[in-house]
Length: 402
Image (cartoon, rainbow, N blue to C red; front, side, top):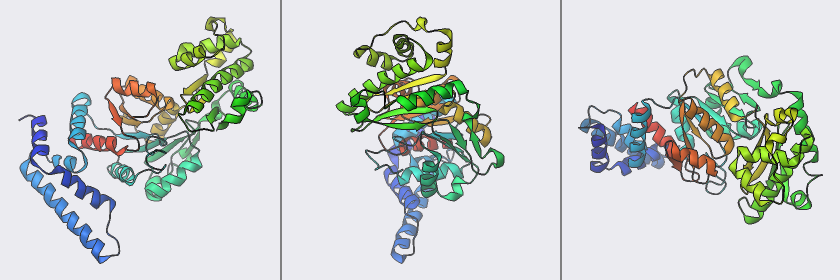
């Protein structure tokens, strides 16, 4: 009988839903100093072990089935089996965005759910390194990681943080390599562009942008965010205007025709092209850029996130560069990564692992359009908002099959 057929039998003939309920209770409700609570936990633990033994006895040639059924639904298990058939290997490193990926403002109150945190500890205990890849500052990330995952895991030597979207990499427990500042090699000419744009981004902006947007970012990133509900009509209009404003400032900084700069970035990104076309701003010919301006712009990325943000960032400081540095410190020589994220900065990492056959990608259902298009054309690993554990369970099942 084929493995797929045996898996069908497993989920058809055994109460896997109860098995997963017992596993979740044992995982997330450890024994406490209460005789009643301890009794409940011990009873659930005994029942869990009995369920697993029953499955192992029914499938002696497939010892992994019990652990797969204890954590993965039927759909997750079959997706994992398909991934194993396609790639023939397990995920050996997790590359994870935080905001709107591991946690969601709308569905998890900006907290990483306990089920997700527990699964991360399970991967860690199985020897799988974790790379947290975020636009947040290092201090913000260190705080919630220590609280959620515990200092022992954070300082185990198998966790790395790519922070501020690639500005630096923090990998506790690696001596001189614990902190790598990736911006140290960035040229003064590019730094000068960010300094200039940041100094004028509000003072030179139209009144609606001055009043309706706030500034985020660092020395190598300038981001305008709306002061209104993300995704609302008002926020969308503001961010569209902010994008055109940033392109104009970039043109001033590099001494180029604003219409040519708009054309340069519109040619590279259809979403930017649509915003510029809908505005009253003229679009010229990107070939009209001077050689010096074109060289500088080739090192500066413009990001547009509908109703959420417009930004400029250094192409030399991005999540791909940060992840590669993290993997180097962690000693992952032959990565097969699970990359989870929702934004275009995450998309670059997804495209990188796809181009190099070194991983798979997953995204929440509310991710940016281009991210969802990439995921749809690879392995269709889309999960509900705030439910990153859905994909982690699939990756766990993949590991058991492998």
